[in-house]
Length: 228
Length: 228
DNA sequence: TTAAAAACAGACCGGTTGTCCTGTTTTGTC
DNA sequence: GACAAAACAGGACAACCGGTCTGTTTTTAA
Image 1 (cartoon, chains in turn brown, cyan, purple, orange):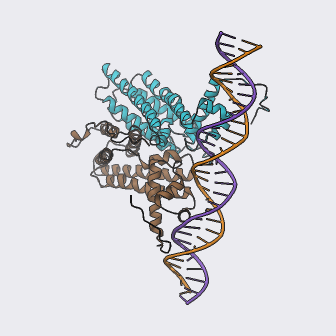
Image 2 (tube, each protein chain N blue to C red):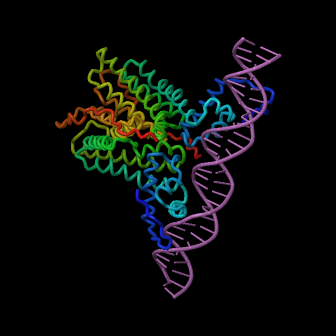
Image 3 (spheres, protein in one colour):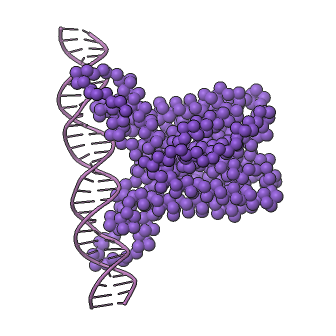
């Protein structure tokens, strides 16, 4: 652990954007792994090495900080890990499959499941404050709409005619959210693969590539229980 | 609001079981609607009209209280609303359908979505404490096993041969959990029906009763937003 | 150069939190 | 009735929470 030896009282560099980014980084991580209420602003200040005055200058209240995390970080995470890959995929179903497997592989590699950032905050904050709830609901809506739009695009190309776009999107997002919830609680990402396998039975798969060995169950990964 | 005029210093009735039940009632409701960290034991004591000494006598710490809520109330809720109805149904798929629709109807009637008790606590507490995590993981496991066992029973009766019991159970629990998460965030139970509809496409329904009009979308229920 | 605004530092405060502690009353047992 | 244990009452307390406040330094604008 390398800590700057001294703040050197005569030297200071104003870097509002960098400081704001650093605070959002720390808050994003803390809110996801410990939750909103369990993360005190004192903890966040210490973790980011930011003074109370600086924090208050950029985020007047803890709620404002959380709202910024939701709008800028959680929404971006959903965009990055779900919306963009699905839109870039050959089809909606193919994109969904790829994201499920990519997330499962990543979780198994890092050996620890922190859960879905959106769902973590949604459960804790949806009923606590209308502003939180609206912000989170908007992200869910955008997520589902992106998948539904992709299904519609597939259908205009003549594929996957028998699928209801809205229902498929809702089921996909729900299955992923619920699977991540179980994976977090069990600290085992295997349930993601189970859910994906169940999801793919929704239609007689028209593509020849079946991914036979990719769907096999991998069980019991939990390298470091890390009792806190 | 009717408050007993005076505790009547000479009159007291020891009722340990009743007091314990009253505390669990209040804590169960508060933990679900406000969350664990947002519910102070002072609030709980006031809501249950219980003194600090009495509370500490039955539950030495807040964690012990939450653990009791999980073991006795959350597990019972899953048993009551999911396991028992599914086991009593004509088939696993029929039971799943019935529970989805019953919950959706109940939520729409009461006009407010507090979310799934198990998932609410699982998200907030799974990473906070190993004891919490294990207790919650056990409930998830029992939930999934009950559904999988029911599928296996169906298959031994010759029905639903093409379904993988574990995968179907995982997908069902995940879809319900995720749908409740979205329903809570959007304060709209309609997504439950969307997910059920998507779920039922998983297999070419062999039974003639298709429930055509039961699956239609009902949208935008939100009678009382109730800004707190 | 200078004045104003922005960026930051750090102490401070009232309120709340969870828990513990001492004491009193009820209940069960002989 | 005597005694011990259980059941309950209520205050005390240290730690912590989120927010505010005053003051200093850096940057920008004129």
